Image (cartoon, rainbow, N blue to C red; front, side, top):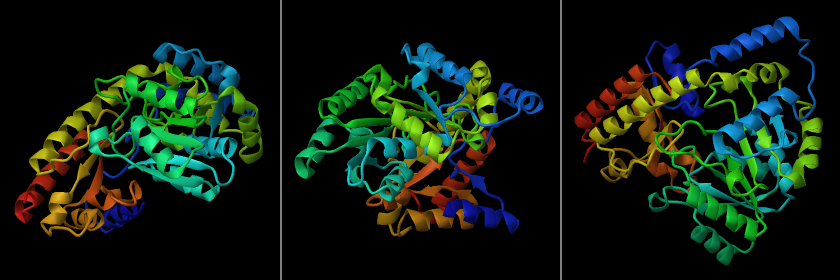
Length: 380
């Protein structure tokens, strides 16, 4: 958020900014969604729905799981929330008591930690590395339990923000089985499903029907500001989660729910967005390597590249990723996100680049970074 604010100030002062810091699509919602919203405004009262959401949209999501994954999901287990963020808070409230020990891999999305901490849970950090593709393993989970004692939950994202890495089917099965055998709630963030590059993203529900699965219309369907996420609820928590929804938000935004019914008929548009991300991904991977960035996480999915900047810190070119990102923004108008939010202990050595923006911006940003590296000795 600080980077975005600084970028906005630069733009207001007349400077140009190439936005590689923003973790959201630069495209609008699909045309069918927008048309459905217009119809709803003309024809519907736009009152409350039930806490779980409209029956039509719940059935569409269930059909989506059948079509994409071959998994049968009872529509009654689907609940819509105010974005995936609302789903996480509801899931944490339902699954954990104060003092619960919940494992969160790092680097990872910072709001997991912040929400759990605010709810009185103990966040158990699980450091991951390039060797495990920045994803947890059963061996790492065993070590956590051996050293610190039993845990109550595991939150992971695949594909991941900020690394873009993901679990393949085998590793997802191993993680799900480990959680089940240890009585651990498995909360799977699948918000970036659909945004993958040559590799299929498995859902946790293929391996554990009692996993808590969270997704959203924000990323693949390009509907961030519509604030509509969903939970696939395990049977044991369905009543609790529904009551939480009733008391905390009453319901997710009705207009967004009515519009989102059309989203599943808009895959052609969404796949065109994914094709553009794939082009941008190749531009950044090639451009960053040309600029001397050799430590790049495998960008299996989402629209992020997690890049190590140790070579710049060790050469004295920058003190840490925060000062480096500030310099790039001030000197060459390239906005990127320092890694400190995603990994409090090691994030000063990493930067997250987003390729969700335009192809022209991605191309120009790589030109500027390469010129900067050449002029400053950035390759040393």
